[in-house]
Length: 334
Image 1 (cartoon, helix red, strand yellow):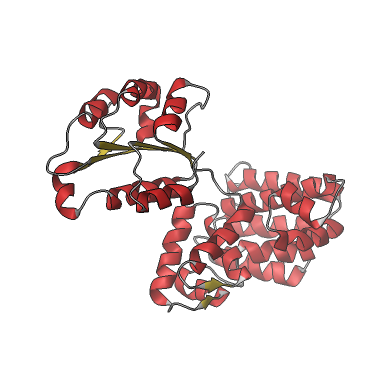
Image 2: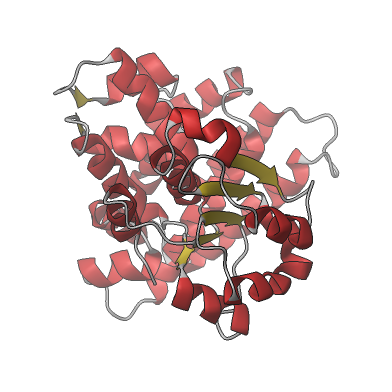
């Protein structure tokens, strides 16, 4: 399977494949490769007649093949980029007929997001043999901070650990969203800057002191005062800190803590691998594990389920979100 780095290098060196089938859960690299092909093969003058962008909801496989078989006009190639190609999944195997006899002057790019081809079937094997078959896999939470550091390093920026973790907590593993926020920061801050938690707070709007990352730390340490300060801030700013999101992320945290207790080998490397977390977090899970025995963690997961039900108005129509959150925190810490 081709890597992003290899594909990009080949495109930049004008080693262009006749077909790029870009599939998988992470849309960021699919878009990046499609854009690189779109920007690298033709000149601006040639694009007018020889580059088209189609959408899976507006075309079928037969019409794509028909367009792919055309000859370019006053250029060496034509480029066809099919966005949202996953909408053609029911008939995608029919593309095999074209791949067996491709038009050598056509570069076809299929953006097949959130789905994958069965690599055991004929189509995937054909593409891998005659072109580029690329699967863009989602990163785990623990891989995102390193990805942020690599992206920034390539553009002469650094970032503090807390700042990268704040971005990960706030934006999850969606690389497109993270990339957009990094672009905003780089537009404001000069090259060579080491991005801090304060920069994140001032320019992206994530509080460096009142966020789910800090709340989990405070709960793990059983820091009652700090946890209550954060909860009160959440209650006063419900739009920025939706109850359903807070409950979901706490549920994820305590589920991981339950997994931690079940691990026979609690070495740093093994915990990071098993829980799919950054090794930076392992000591915090070890502390939380001492503060919350397995039986208590199981109880807390039950409390989180009850709070989730209440947040949806079941049996607690008159109870505001802030009250549900404060009651939940009391049960967790006591």
